[in-house]
Image 1 (spheres, rainbow, N blue to C red):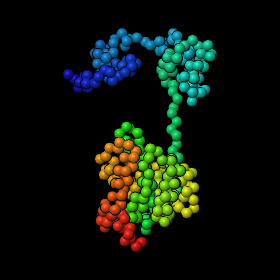
Image 2 (image 1 turned 180 degrees about the vertical axis):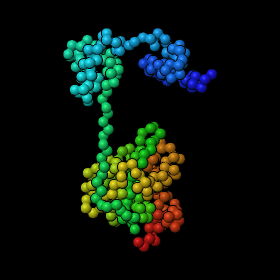
Image 3 (image 1 turned 180 degrees about the horizontal axis):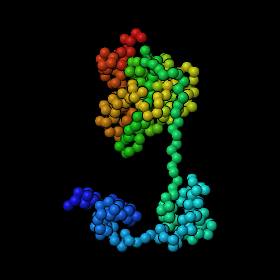
Image 4 (image 1 turned 120 degrees about the vertical axis):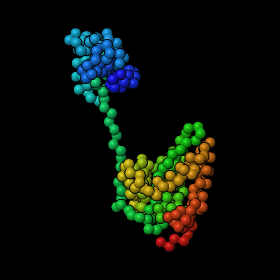
Length: 294
């Protein structure tokens, strides 16, 4: 068997969906491989009578030629209007057609409304690219992570990490967390530590670029937004998230929100007090912070 026959036979005829596409495939096989119409039709799964039939839309006697022309003109005049609105306007102008036929003609004419992608908002940094955190409370990194309870409902986890001491500071575990809730949690962390960060490093999530967080930062705390799609520019929080996912989220099932809050809270406590870090001389974050002289 010739190699081209093996290639064509290996493909299911169902892969070529419409009669028009199969008709084009038959023409291609006959032109390129010089095979008979019978052989080409058998290979693509096209009936020979269908192959020889000329669709009305391709003939001068097309009964829908007028409506097709009207649809093309309509789509040109109203490029953001789809076939549903076209159907109601066509009926209003006296065209006798049901919605299924109009939708089919709309599709055959290649008319469609192009989906506009919303441009993602990007936060405006208030400080130049920072720097390495040379002491505690210089840079706090913020990020969210997601999981779910066993009933499929979402869990949203807020984490805040001091980039110098590697401590995880507070954090929330809730179904949803707004920008206002984030600002309130930062107030709790500042009260507990007795100091505000010089800079917040964050991504361009909706809570991060919200006015509520900008108002919280004011003129005392700078905000440094990483470029969209470049999480590696927030490395400390991404490393923390990886540890949280690997050591806690992936090995626990959460039966309820309360269960998730307790388990994640316990893990963060262990992370701060017991987990050694090679970059900290194999001290835990809390132990390193206690002896840090920077």
